[in-house]
Image 1 (tube, rainbow, N blue to C red):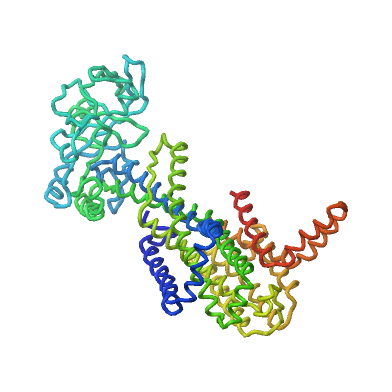
Image 2: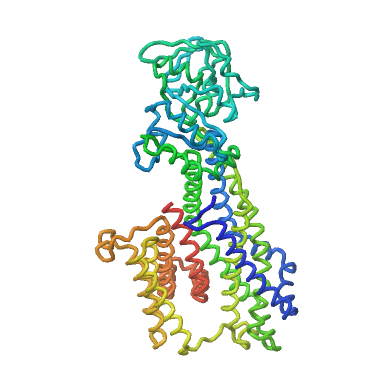
Length: 618
């Protein structure tokens, strides 16, 4: 797999390696410049083993999902590519009938058409001495039914091909399933070589007589040998078996002397190595047939490109669906470190009281978090490989008859998954560390809640301005860009109310009505009927990334409304609990916890909501 979301996987890997190096450099800086702080952070990892295991399991979720997505893409890419390479063998380009003025051709639309075999001489003259071409093979193909009277079995559609026995060695030659060479030229005039798939379909053996029909006349042929499936034996797709006779015999039997269906070209470099020369050979072949009603189809290269596009599409879809799990994983990381901070609050307060600075406290948590992140990345990548194999087995059970699924995870995908998982975890850890380091020393030592005082902070205006710029830019790109219009516009429009909320906060507006309005705004925008949204904003299009955006913003909007009005909802629950007088103390105690920590309550609601949203809509 070479591309994902239109970006080169190699480029993505290089960027992620650089980002991981920056993260590790930051940790190394702490270890060198603040060794005591670094050791204070790292000592908690081996000290609390059960806690460490739970944290690593929570943090590895993102890496697991990413590794499984990339591994599944690699599996699809390898499986489809293997079919193309094994199915076409040395057949790289095909010269077929075409009316295209640029001499482009398609073998699918030209299998039932033939052209003058005199063209072969011109192709030999133009490409015979080309160092990039090591084989030229004329082929006549007929689609015929076949019956085996001995077994009573039949095949309604087969490919009977005629090839030049003198040239087939340039394409690897005909071989039996055991690997022994088959001499096509030595077969008698009433003999035929059948492919292994046709032999299995008809339960045929060497010496048996097969009957086919051409122009409503029966033709009987004796099986001279059974060849392994290959284009030389007439196998061009998995659904249609083939058989082969010398070219001149098929031309005579079908009264098509001097006619060909296509001319196959083999590139220098073998089955896979010749792909690198496909563009060069295709361009040269089109020059040779210029002015003729012929075209060149880079058939093998097109199939390999299709495999890459299909695997990229599959990976993109899997990643978008997996982004819900990644988002839940990020919330889980923040929640884990928030709860760690709550548990160690007196310890952090004592450290601050004896002289530890806030920056050093952040560094301590970053050091500890980086240790968890590196371990979680390894565990997540390993489990992602196992998940890939499980998915491959499931796909094999579903479509194994049409496509052999070969589980495979490339080293590049593992590097991308590990780096991306660690970087995401590291960024979440840094953000959490910055948040939890803000504490009142006295309140922390006594394990009392911090008393928040309303202040006008200039950074509120900075964030409001930043959201204005980013949201406006995304909305503008959504209206004017060519790629990702719907996702850009929707993201930009959904960020705008947060900018307004920050401005209102700065000037003293209360939180509940402002953030409740933001949540309602998000829900209303996403629940707009498509016809109304199109009239308001135009047809923005969008792909399956809109599925993720809609889920995130709708869950965010609903969570904001719930958290900002949590006391009202909890009072309603408490009043309902009054029906059960004996349980009322327990109910009131239980509902006191969500109200005491609204941030954690909001994250838990968002986590479960994202999971339920993805399950229901998928």
